[in-house]
Length: 186
Image (cartoon, rainbow, N blue to C red; front, side, top):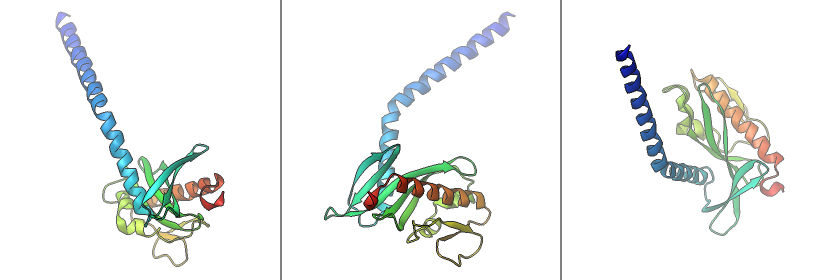
């Protein structure tokens, strides 16, 4: 019995020390993590709205968005972070639309845990490029094979669920942005 108690106490001590070390490491790194996340979003905002030089972060209701301006202080468009459930986990994407909320100017997937080699292709440039210039006035549709109509996105072979999830996330968030009357719609 003494040997079992000794093992239990040793394992408990190791677990407590490991937890304390992890908590301290988190405290030391949390600000760097937040700064890196902010930088990543900022880079994505500028990449989805070509010509934007600065942005102003605003909130309407629970919706946060970025009004983006060119070097003449003219509104270039709106960017926002959209997220939802993918095949395996949360997909987080930055979406850019023009100031009238009529055209998608670009998207960039900034976080996902989709299957490597399949669903993870949603963050590849060729897939993200499909969204540029599409209408934000009507819903996007996912198709298997080559798109033959406007506002169609070609699904990734073997990753239809991830592809559909991204399209659904973008459709839902564009509708939500319109409800909050962001852009020139206010």
